[in-house]
Amino acid sequence: MIKPFSLIACLVACPPVYAAEPFFADIWADNWFEMRVNGVSVAEDSVPITTERSFNAESFGFEATRPFVIGLVAKDFIENDTGLEYIGSRRQQMGDGGVIAQITNGAGEVVAVSSAAWRCLVIHTAPLDKSCEAEPNPVAGEGACAFEISEEPAGWDAPGFDASDWAPATVYSARQVSPKGGYNRIDWHPDAAFVWGPDLEQSNTILCRGIVE
Image 1 (cartoon, rainbow, N blue to C red):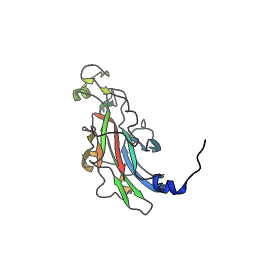
Image 2: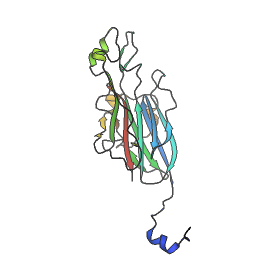
Image 3: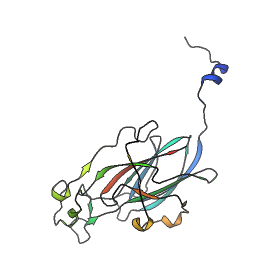
Image 4: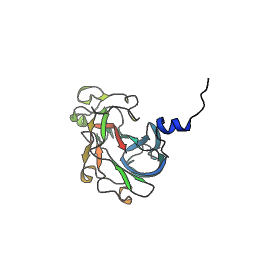
């Protein structure tokens, strides 16, 4: 039997309902990113990661209800699990990554920025030994070119996930990341920082989680 709705009872016992708000995000990534809100994808890099020198900036709007979780997937380009690029050429090397983000509300106020307060997990590390970079015929998984890879933890980008054992995001300077490709067209908040895994070269895919209260 369906019980009649009681407005008086709901005023006492029902949880508050908050309206969705408009937000705006600026993200620069080397090389590629996807941003999720409470586990739902809201944007991803428009330039394929396979494009040479694919770092670029993206700006986009979305709606969300506070508090919400920002789940940021960031990847550096690699040709294969060696973690190298330009394999077999004189430019053979480990690439380096980096990502910076800021979120503003409808009034233009900054409500979140990438920083050491975010928690990040590296799910692809390669090569485990940097001497792989000088191998004349690097083979993923062999010798210095060993790698570590894992799946995204279930629900990592959703509310309620416990990321307390994840490391704080590693913060880097603009000089270390050397951003190009649209970075300078964005007015970055002073607190917005470049973040990545513990090594710009060996950390190839990272998951970062932040909370907007």
